[in-house]
Image 1 (cartoon, rainbow, N blue to C red):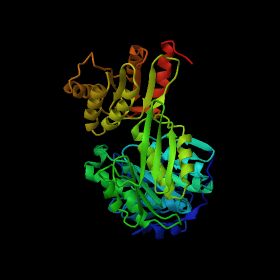
Image 2: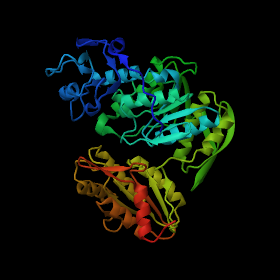
Image 3: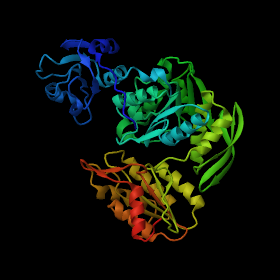
Image 4: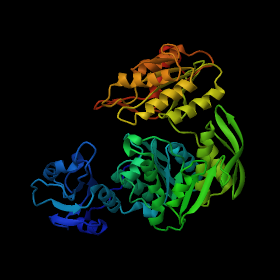
Amino acid sequence: MAADSHPAPRTLASLLPELPGARLLQGDPRVAISAVHHDSRLAGPGSLFVAVKGFTVDGHRFLPDVAAAGAAAALVESGHDLPPLPGEIALVEVPATRPALSAASAWFYGHPSRELVVIGITGTDGKTTTSHLLTSALEAAGARVGRLGTVDTYLPGETGHVTARMTTPEAPEVQRLLRRMADARCDYAVVESTSHGLALHRLDHVQYDVAVFTNITSDHLDFHQTFEAYRDAKARLFSALERSADKGAGKHAIVNADDPSAEYMLTHAPRAHAIRFGLEARDADVVARNIILRPDGTAFRILTPQGTAECAIRLPALFNVMNALAAAAAALALGADLQAVARGLGQCPGVPGRMERIEAGQPFDVIVDYAHTGDAVRKVLAVLRDVCQGRLIIVVGAAGERDPGRRFGVGRAAAEGADVAIFTSEDPRSEDPAAIVREIGRHAESAGRKRGTDFLEIEDRREAIATALAMARFGDIVVIAGKGHEKSMVYGDQVIPWDDRDVAREELARLGYRR
């Protein structure tokens, strides 16, 4: 992506009115701020350091370091004992530093979301695909669109990969990217809004105009603890519609009417214009009919209050029809022409790492997909089963330090949906990778599958992929699931470069397949 136009320095005094409960403890409020950071390693001369208490490290412990590095000011959380600090650094106490980080970031970048119509997309599955489809639909309708999501950040005419392993980056990065979109004269910003990002206040100062809910399953309970807390975190997106400024586009709440939590989301945005999409719900406003599923895409007729249109997308499976309906509903809510929307959906090339085919001249199919939960794995296998002429082989694992329920879900889904499963490592982090693999295997075994015949346990992910490719024959499908677009794997405290797509190509080349 092109270099940023860096904001001009602003005085600390101009920030204080935007921080409820702020109290200047020491220093000159007229000091100029030239950057906002929560990472002490980046806090140099002129910067505002926000001391956030993280999950493993408390940022307050680094206050002496940032003062020594020349930071101009710091935000600290009330109730913390502070070390002696030089009088040159201004200190501001706030009730909570996570929300303050969001406020300070929006202030520093000039509240860019006030200059854009912002569409937020939340849900367990489908956020990334929906955001790409929506981008394409809005562009076909003649709009300039920016996108902030899992796979990449996008501005008209350029794209840049997100390297951080989170769907929603921290507030300074969110606001920096929104400023880039505003400066690029984008009409719309499409923002994947995860439950983590919403719960951790990373998106507090994004002025949303449209909220889209795709679905919710029992995932991420390692972080949220309960399904209700997880659902409430997603509902924060809809609550944001109630407090966001009116920019002339209206406020629209778009929900998957087939999901039991749809109406719950709508209760959090009572003043927004509600639009429901779905395949089964009787009260859906945007629906698909005459669906024709193919291995390489799907055709359907889209029915909306604005009329009907024929649509053909380059993505297979019913769940991608749902993603297309979500995107269409959002675009139509913003006044896009239905025929342009249908054309744009069809022009979307797909999403890297989502049902991505790896072609090297081999006589069997190789698919890389991001599916890393039981529900997602089950859906992918169901889609591929319909088009598989031979055996369906899956390579899949479960991440360490995440909801252990994923291991049960992935193991059972693979056992029930694949002919052969190979369980392997997937970001074990501090956990024993072999123990995770064995646990997944036990769940497959409890589903009636036989170790060594129906499934294998191969801890090394490259070896697992190589084994799956070596056993594949004409008509088989090998699906490598769990990491999709990701470009690293986490072992302990090490982040190792890794890309399932590259590894698959390398191992196919070893077997003599090159294109």
